[in-house]
Image (tube, rainbow, N blue to C red; front, side, top):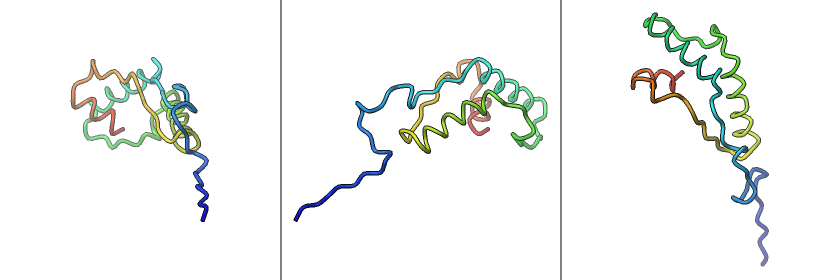
Length: 98
């Protein structure tokens, strides 16, 4: 009896992928958007966070690329360069949860 193995179209081996398929960096503009949002949240600690009310075009563009890699690409993504070195632990948590 012969068995045929079927893999989803998203199956890959290491040699099939390149760093640009999964590695994404926050641009300077996207980092600025996040820092500006954190400043807003610090000034208004009781403000409810509705990201639709904030203009975040660079973050939205980045996350669209990440979503595309997750949904139609390699199925994982690495995000790099969120400025954790200049954020407090509380700010980093807020940025992550935003």
